[in-house]
Structure formats: structure tokens, C-alpha cells
Length: 261
Image (cartoon, rainbow, N blue to C red):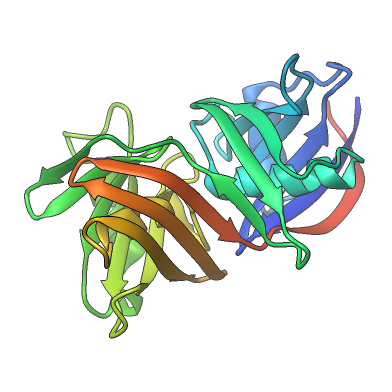
């Protein structure tokens, strides 16, 4: 089978995308893992299929780099929205279905893609850290000098600890900067089993923890290895966060054809 693929990235979080609206693409776990391999394949943090879905502009089907179907991917959702636009699906507001439910997204005149995330109703304390599910499960650890952290080593230890080994968890190391509304986030992602340049659901989780307005609107600027994102949300109380928007660039890198055995 010859697969027409498109490579996209959102702040360095990169994905293989394919148009599956004709439902003619069937990929196994090993095939997806091979395509995402950075030495023997195209190379990506994950692979996504844009599917037809009645009542929606599209359905987003996401697979981790290990070839297994994944949970919600924030940067992936933003890239998928830009992909839909490039395929000729033009909307003022997109409405699509992902693994965690319905999402909305919009593209502004500068090409910035804003994705509405699911509301968060629970933030759990875990020792001195936090557990937040923003469509994917996240462990948030506040640190100083985040750029000096061995994210692979420390993240792997937490992800594979007895509390999280079965389901896995994404691990975020977060430094709050002098400006109360700005943070740096580095993330170890399950399914990739390494640090990625950016993680949309992780950035979102970190921003919720690092609110600057206790009750009301928050706008948190986030620096990642791959660029800058913004998370806007309304904080109602400790366990209620609504109208959460993840905003940032999503760009096409290249496209091509690959033979799949």
C-alpha cells in the first residue's frame, strides 16, 4: 500500500497525518511504530488519521509513536485542524470528535490555532505534586531551574513507578518565571517514552496549576523546547476549570508517499 502522508508540527511536537475520509487506510501497530521511528521511518511523536464523522467536521484518531491508540493530544488537535483547513474544510469554528469527546477549534488570521479543551473538574494533590487529566493524564511537578533537569531519567522514574506503571502517565516539570503569568514546561510523554519538544495537554495541565487569578479569567504564557503556547481559562475554584483554550502555531512541514508492507 502506498500512503500519502503529511508531516505537521505544533511547537516541535510532530505528527504524521493522513486523510482517511474514504476509510481506505488500515494500519497495524507495528506499521505505525515503524512510520514514527526517527531512523527507519518518517519520524514523529505520533500518527493521526482524519476520519469522516456524521455531525462533525471530522474525527481525529490518534496513535502514539509506540503504535498504540492514544488519548487526547492537544498539539495534535491543533495540527489536525490546520490539516483540515489545508484539505479544503474551511470553517469559522471547527467542531470535531476526539478520544475524550467533542472539541472546538478556530484559526486566526495569523494562522494561530486555538483549541478548546475539556473542562477539568478534579485536581489531585500527590505528595507535593499534582495530578490533572486534561484529556490525557498528567503529573505536574514544580521545580526550579527546569532546564537543568534530566527529564528522561526523572520522567521515566515517575511514569514507571508502581502508582502509574499500568496505565502510564505523562510527567511535566514546570518552572514559574518572575512574571506570575509565565512558565516553562518540559514533558516526558508516555507512548513516546521520552521527552518531547512540547505537549499540549501537558502545557494545559501545568497552566491550570500555575493560575495567577484565583477566581476568574487566566491567561498563562508557556515556553516549551519547541516554542511558545498560551493557555486561557476560567478558574472557578480548586476543582473547576472551564473554557480552557490551548493556543499556538501549527504548521505543515512536508508531504510525501511511503510504501507500507
